[in-house]
Each structure stands twice: as structure tokens, then as C-alpha cells.
Amino acid sequence: MALDEIKNNEAIELVNKYLADQDNDKALSTVNKLLDRDPSSDQAWLYLGIVNRRIGKLDIAIKCFETATELNSTLVEAWGLLTITFLDKGKLEKAEEIMKAAAELNPNDEKIQFYRDNLIRVYKKFGPFF
Image 1 (cartoon, one colour):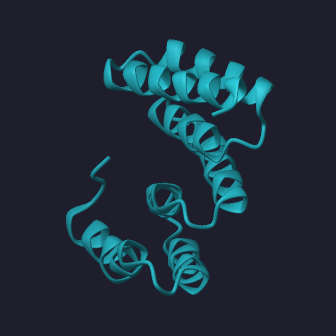
Image 2 (spheres, rainbow, N blue to C red):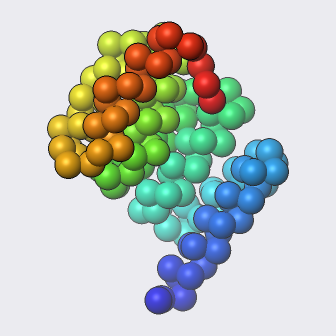
């Protein structure tokens, strides 16, 4: 494993810890440093989206989740959070488009297919759950 990859993995673990501790400032700082070092890290874009979602910056979160899915179309969490964030903004039609695109790009991924079939339905019935 290359040194840069090890450093990136360590940074991702640190971001996870900060997110678990609800320390959004440290998570944001760490993930931004990671993206400065490696702007092609799909995981970093995912976590940047999560942090921005937590602090109420939904439009920035959407851009981050979109970047993550562009870098890695199999990143299930990014597809799910992108969908939920659109739902939070009241954009049901866009959320449905996102899940359709995710399912088409990942026709054999059972989790994405499950999300496609259930995520929006559950959100509409029970409301926000993140």
C-alpha cells in the first residue's frame, strides 16, 4: 500500500471519529485537508457532504454527494444521502431521478435496488430520518 493511500485511510478514519463524536468542525477541517491532498477521493467527498448536511448546508452537501457519485458510481451511501438531501429540500421528483440513475448505473447492486424500491417510500411515510 502506498504511503499516500495509508495517509488517506488514516484521515478517513479520523473523519469517521470526529463525525461519531459530533465534532463537525474537526471533521470539516480534516476532510478539507484530505481533499487538498487528494481531490479524487470519493470517500472524502462523501464525508464532506455528510458534514455539510449536518450543519445545514444542503446545497453544498448535494454538490459533494454528486461529486462522490461521479467519482465512484457504486458508492451506495452517496446515492442514498443525495436522494435524502433532495427529499429534505422538498424535491421529490429530483430524488426519484437520482434513485433511478443509481439503479441504472448499478443494476446488480442489491442495496441500491433496495434503496430505489424503499428509500423514498419510507421517507414519504415517516419523514426525515437523518
